Length: 129
Image (cartoon, rainbow, N blue to C red; front, side, top):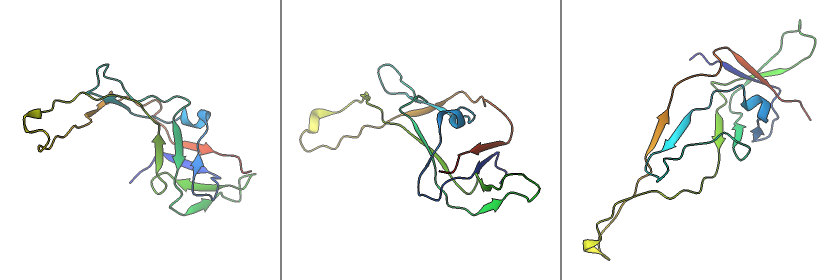
């Protein structure tokens, strides 16, 4: 699988958080919560957290580069965007068998759009601390 993202010098910790500048270079899909009154959708704001799980091996930069770095492939090290939402979902319930009936309410999630911000290989750099 071809992956268009590489992470440079990620920390060895279990959680690597990407800063706003790095997040702005990544296409993040918009998901609509279709069965809410306002048909709300996901937001990429300061409440969202983008983390990289380091699960794959890294490659060292070539000796020809002035600064030594470690490169992690995006295909082996998943990126997760998380955010808390406070929403009320609209559901229909059949109360005729209450309190013995079983009711289910689903969250209807729908992808919006398909445009990519940038169609190029990305390298996201985190300064080592």
